[in-house]
Length: 634
Image (cartoon, rainbow, N blue to C red; front, top):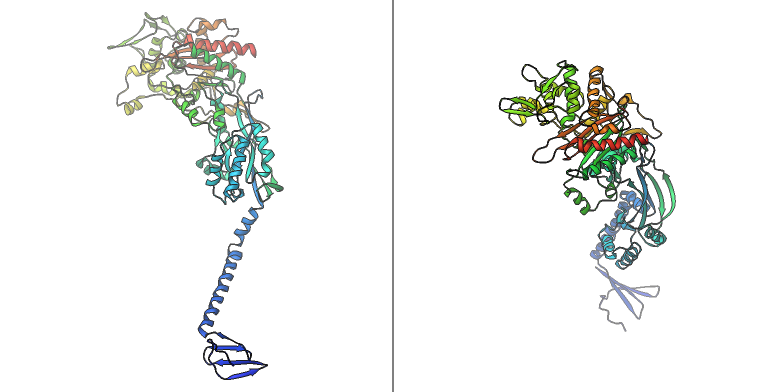
């Protein structure tokens, strides 16, 4: 008996090898034996659907394979290789800076930093928490902050992220011992710049900081990379390319935790060039110490500057600006509160007064006016004027510093005693005597390199300023008066000079009339040096005879004038005092510029103590102390 089958419709039956087959016309068939029958329903539309599904699936798979293997194959291969090979930067040691006697002024100290590679961190949050806790314990940090760094970093990035760079040597040893088991954690050792602090050296040496976007753009074609240290001030930035060196690279094979297993290839770094300065560290210290005492012992605003130069070649022997700052703070990454404290200090410790401080020179400008008058032939060494205490011009009186005047004087005694009346005559004239006039004074000021940078190898130098009629008319909307010329002739009014400029023209007077470009670089170690002739700016712009007259006047300043306290030195010296008035009711600036020995000068020094008072009482003792030490020591 046949069983009813809902899936088939009975029709003609054919028997094949013991099986019964019935075929329904249209859309179904079934198979079965004589006892049981199994029927399958399979329409043409369903067959087409299955066919197209399979077809599109195969097209998708093949397309995806083509995309992965052909189009993106190289990218994924690089990523896969990146999981195995890493390229590490080998930081070049920076060149060392030495003083003229090969005493190192800086050092490269090993500095430990701890980083992590985001892509090498454990995948699970629990493992990340454990890693953060272990790392925090090793370097005595807050584990929650380290975990926060882990979670905030792009998970597939291979760029190192800094965890800490301020920890002890003992902590670095502990990290090193566990580093292989700390997935993604990397201990880095790199050189950090350390400086001799104090003595005004920070303004000379400068400091380093991480390269910024603009610097990187300017120096990228010279091998610099993001994260490199770069000179930010002083000699560090002026000789950046020389000191920097060239970083190297190493390609290493790493394991799944990002730990190096084998070095594949290396390109060793090129160490930066060492440089030897003209600076004498001991003289720098002595000058800074003496200046510091002068600041404390006077009514000074707390600031001072001095420059010592070799008149024979323009070498800077010492350059001090006080107060100074600790450039080691900057090298280590200065904290915000420390930097703000520097900015808030009214004495401006970050300001290099020696090359960027512009001051009225007062009487130390008088040797230039004297040289101009002699060179122009309006006076001779024997020409005299009568000093009665000042000059009266209409309702205005231009005083001398000595009530009743100095009597009849010549150029030698006028320089020695800083007689204003004599220089009023030279500058603006009086009665039937015609003076130089402001244009000529300015012309000779420029001959002695005032009103323009000296070209010293330090950033931030200012030009100073020498006023004239056109400037006053433009800036102050006033004509130039005879009083302006008188003030200019004694170094007052609007004229401004830097301590470096004063040291430069003092050295030119000392050596007989030659200006050398002041410089701090003496030699590139194993790389040559320049001679004095390479730094020659000009010579014989003042006749030897007239220079000698000026020198005699400066020597007389010590023998009988305003610097008689220097007579006790064991070496013959010459110089000029200056007491420069400033705006308001502040005390005057205290100046002295001199050289020694008188007959064959080896050193010229310009000194200013801001608001220090009388030059003879404040700046002269600094010169005396330093020169006495210098010639006893050398």
